[in-house]
Image (cartoon, one colour):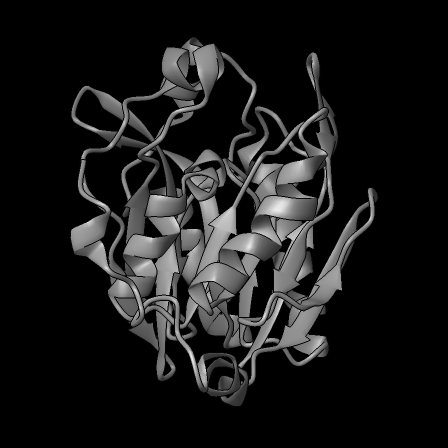
Length: 261
């Protein structure tokens, strides 16, 4: 599978413009041979836009933007994972949704670990654990931004059989070490591919740090962005998973009975 990440400036309060940019990124991704395109956290609406505006722009998982993205996915025969504000009754979630190349909604994940006052003022935290789904023969798990900073979140997906973990994010300065240190570590200690798609530029008082990356199960960084707008593409070779786990496996060599408090 060829995976593309679109590292871009946020488009706050501009769903129509962000959908146009998404289509352009989809065209570029396909031209580079990608099977799946991953966009940042809250890509559809922007992230730091305030609780009132988030609530006004929030949509259901099958809302008008999802329908438009499904059209783009079908037209380009490209899977698309995007972040958006999801409305479910009176609750608003920080969510990501994956639409496959046939335009079918395959997975919807709601952020479980909310970051600071910004997240907590805009969203409800999900109580549903991350789940695994299959895509083109791969077992895929989803997390969002702050989730990946908790070892248990990625380990839960690895224990469930994940081959690859996709992480749309909105990581800001001065937390570059998350992209530089924690992301490769999470891939290595769980022996999974891990893709981390971030913003660049600013949004209000937030300055995003870029550094999007795709990391192999042995911790090797396959491709990494700098701090400008960029489309990354890398091949995910399933043989790298087998090689990383050959001889030892952190998941299988665990001794959970010793870890209980």
